[in-house]
Image (tube, rainbow, N blue to C red; front, top):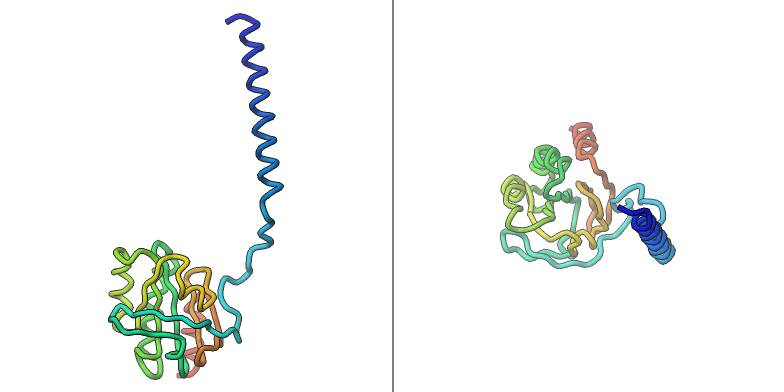
Length: 175
C-alpha cells in the first residue's frame, strides 16, 4: 500500500471519529437530565391509589371502589427472580389475610400467554389480574419496580416494600 493511501485512510478515520464525537456531544446536550434514580420504586405510605378498572383472571370486574378494608397487594413481573422467590411467602400471607381471597390482589405483569405459571400459583389465594408492562394498574398503584408488596386501608397505602419477608415478620408478630 502506498504512503498516500495510508495517509488518506488515516485522515478519513480521523474525520469519522471527529464527526461521531460531535454527534454524540449534540445528542447528550439535547437529552433531558433524568435526575437521580428513585430510591424507592414503590408508593409512599399515605399515597392514595388512583382510579382504575380491570378484570380478574376469573372474569370479575374490579376497580378502586372495591378497595375497602385492609388489603394485601402484590405485583409480580415475569422474568424477575425476586418475584419468583416471593410467590410462596405471598401466598402464605394471602391465605392468612382476614377476609380471605377477596382482600388480596395479585398483579402479574407481562405477556398473558406466559403469565400462566404465576396465575396458577396465585389464583387460590388472591384475586389475580394480568397486565402488560407499563399497564394501568402499575400506574394506579404508583408501582414502577418489581416485586412490590403493599398493605392498604381502603385505597390508601399503609406500607410498601420490595421484600415480602418484611410483611411476613409483621404478621408473625401479631400471631
